Length: 334
Image (tube, rainbow, N blue to C red; front, side, top):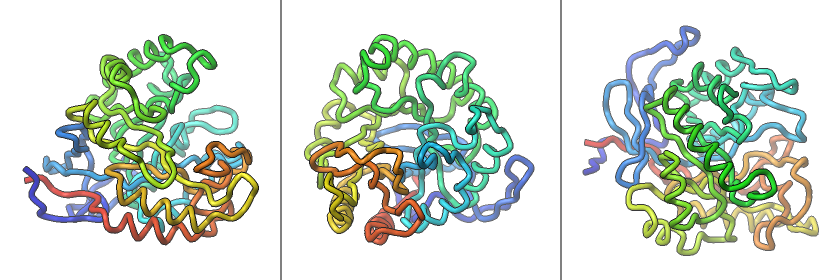
């Protein structure tokens, strides 16, 4: 039974000063030692052995704007994330783990994770199909950083169900997933292993993911101003996983380039009020996404950010922060 001893906007509360990676000293923060799914909740265990019910108030973070920037903007981006009231980011590839030459930069990875930890932002770290290959980037990353206290979970793939037969077959994806989950749990047995599915998975797809070992299934959902009955439908499919949205959002431009920033703000307000856990797509506009209309109810993909490319806020930022601030990010469990 939950007992609200403390209601916190973010995960961290006062504790003794601790040293992370023997490089930086962080005061007044709890260390995440474990994360798990239990009773439709995300439960994390702190360094004092106390359990916390964690709520994701998230933003998708993919800083490779125009396909030319990799991790260079993270110090400028952190204030934008905090300014939107978010307590967590979801990435598509591990920040700092690679650069323009595809090299794995250990020091930069450490710097980035330490910076997010210091700013009380957790990370759900994404890995692609290629990253998940045996001995590949996923394993290299998890061996070095998987137990870092900034990492809430890892997320394997991103709506690959839309690309069966185009990138690989469904059977190839599930085989890769099963193998990757097994290897990931060797490195991080105490962290959540999640997968991101396009829209609501069927009961069969749910069974396939759980049979592959996934702890948590999140959904990319773009349905306009609301999620419909997706939570009710999800609760019929799963008896223990929470309802988590790995992507949701609205563009500030329509297909013709008309400014729809007020509509973006209004729809995000409604969506956040109805979600349990979610990652808003996305932090800043990315021109590399192109100007096609990905859906009649979403608008142009290159203007999905709540900040412009130069970091200037759209009116949605204030709305997102107002709504995120209403959600308790963490509650201690008695």
